[in-house]
Amino acid sequence: MVDARTGRRPGSRETERKLIAAVIQLMQAGGLAACTAPAVAERAGVAVGTIYRRYPDKDALVGAAILDLVSLEDGEREADYAAFA
Image (spheres, one colour):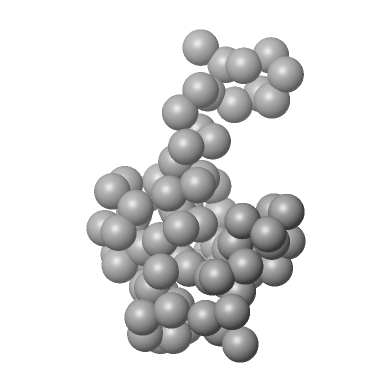
């Protein structure tokens, strides 16, 4: 079933959060080189195809993660941001 407000399935938002968190964790541990699609998928607990259904390529996924990170979400992500500084 699709949420009428967002146009997405209920688990979609959680999957998105898992993907973003996986990218950030991998970047913190090993930089951009560590953010391969298979590594992100494994860390997020999803199939590689799940990434490509949401993003056209790895750069788009990493870009989304960086935008999420720097938005800081009212300070909730400040520690993650500091780790990159």
